[in-house]
Length: 45
Length: 333
Image 1 (tube, rainbow over the protein chains, first blue to last red):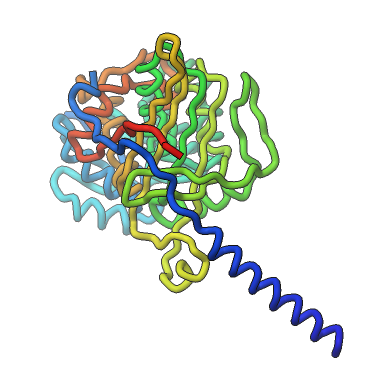
Image 2 (image 1 turned 180 degrees about the vertical axis):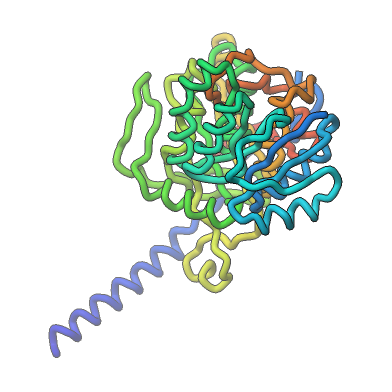
């Protein structure tokens, strides 16, 4: 029973740490200058 | 009278059929599919000058070109039948088995002097043409990286999952490498897709290299298939299927003494992009759309990027609503 509880505790801790890392790991999109421009007539020459 | 045979009545087949009947010069469209019921339904829905035929029959003598909108080895088998009849064919197939089967027909196609266009979809296909267009704009191109997200139907999902599971392959310093899984990389697509994690895969990279034989590095990355259940998507942090697909094409090289990158992107429903690319290619192989010029008409199995002149091909796609964009700017972080 003690081993089972320890396993459960370790599993729970792993899930919690995973959640924290996942939430904190979401960074901002790096800033860029410029953007997307549709290809038009002159681009097809 | 110009007659075209379409094989496949799924998501891509339906879009291809619509694009083909809207192409000036195509007088009759024959549709064959693994399910004859679906072929009849599609022929009925398209209407004018369209009829269903059986898949088992030989390619009818009056057919000028065949559009193959089915995946896997079945596509290669049908391309072989078209070759035997001396009829050019274009295939949408993007899975490893199907592409290998098509490329294996190269000798026969060369001997017969018949063109077979392999990989006429978003990637491979439009991605190869855009890569060639980008390379043509540089003095010297030496590196190309193409990425795709989105799927065109359930069979495309299976092919994408298999490609991401299998060993990747890339062209590196003049040799093929099949490294162990390399891990994913964040790739920025035009809005509304934005950033997606993509992994290097094998299918299509041979066609990309054939389209740009001068490059030292070539790779294709695929994003994971989108999810259909909103709750699962929220829990896993993966993207929900909104129907959109995209491609990003990045070509590096030299312009004068400056090192530059040309980046192109496409956002479109994958089945629409694939259907349009397949229809335009097939119509050209049938001798129509003279404005879409070819880079040589010598027979063989060819990648789209080495078969068509990029500029008129892209202009024809844009006229049909499949538009590409270029990224102008640099990351500041």
